Each structure stands twice: as C-alpha cells, then as structure tokens.
Length: 277
Image 1: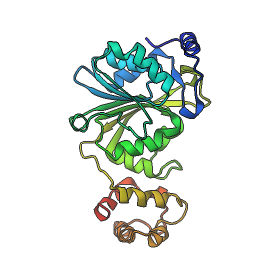
Image 2: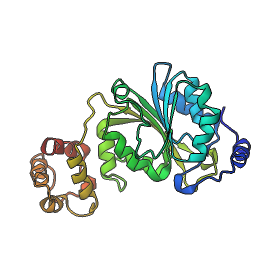
Image 3: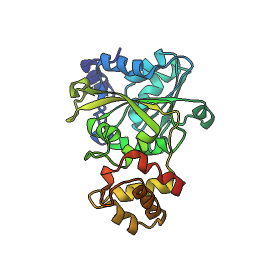
C-alpha cells in the first residue's frame, strides 16, 4: 500500500526534506492509482521494468511486489539515500542510480536486457517528460509504457492531426506506439497536490514501429517551430533539401499545397524516413 498523505508528510519531515517544485516532486498517495498502474503494466517475475524518479518508493514497492526486476534513477540525493538505506538492502532485484533521467533515460538498464524486452512504469517529473520521452524513443523501444504525467503532456502525446496540440512529439510517439488507455487523475492523489490535473497513460509498442533518424527528428522539430506557416514554404527554406523532395511526394498524394504542419496526417510525416533515413 502507498503511504497515506499523513504518513508521507511525516516521512518527509523525518528526512527534513521539502518537496522540490523544480524536480516535480509530487508524491503519489492514492492506492487505487498505484494498483491501476501495475494492472495496466501487466508485469510479472519475468519482466524487466524501468522506473523514473522513485521518490519515497511507493510505486517502486508495488512493482517489486509483482516479482519484476527493476531499474530506477533518482536525481534527489536525500531520497536516493533513503531508498538505499531502507529498500535496497532487502531487494536484490532493485538497481538504483543517483542521477538525471535525461542522462539515464532507461535508468542504466543494460543494452542486452533492453533488447530482450522491457517496460517502463513511472510517475514522471512533469518538467522533463517530453525531453525524457525524446531520449527513450531514440533508443531501444520499450514494449509498454505506463506513465503518470501532466495532462498537457499527455494531450500532446495522443493528439490527432489538425489539433492545436499536435506536434513533433505526437508524430514520433504515435509512429512507434499505440495509445491504449488514458485516465484522468486528480491533483488530490498527490502530496503536495500539483496545480494541474494528471493522466495515467498506457502506450504499447506497435509491431511495425516506425523510427525517425536524428536528422529527420530535427527537421520535423524545425518545421513545427513555425507551425502556423504553410508547410511548403517551410520545406523550401529548410537546410535539408530532402525536406522539399518529401513535400513534393506528399503533394503527389493529393495533399493541398497550402497545408500547415499541424494539419498533415502522421502517415505522410512517416514518408520522411525514406528521405532522411
């Protein structure tokens, strides 16, 4: 069971630790959400799991109770020391790194183990969710991700083309993963309560997952920095001449010449992988 709000406050007081807003420290105190996360992840003793920002170890303990092997990364030195002292000695299946999740996006999970298949279950620090996701999808893709994140980020990840929240991360993520479920989570499920709502998102890797090269990702990001301009004009000015070749191919498929980046369906963006492999 997760720590109650009162027990969480008491433990933080014992540690003389004040939640750090910059690190997105909002500790999960709702047992139903913890159970839902584990249920969605479908993990067992054969699973390799990555957790980002274990904090006080609430979700960590629930993952370990499933029998899974767990790799974690925690940036806060006080919380890392707490986990090393009170959890690590009794959990041989737990690997803990003190560091930034942008430097260790899959928490030090060995390359060979990642290639064999792994899952991510995490209550993500809101400030780093998108750059962290960029790092994850640039490497060995997980089979599944069950992520607690700010609703705004979840909306971007799952956004359809034509919406204001559709952008580069929407293209990269939806080309490789299917959004299987999305559950709204109240701010009252955390201590301290964030000023925004959260979502619990499950993402499953597609059998035919499409990956974008670093050059293609940079090209798409450049285009979306001027998302309200016409796509053709942006491609003509792009430093990658392949962008214009790609756009001409898109036009051959019946797309209007005046289309804007956010209006173009994902399947057309995926054609860029043949021009910038």
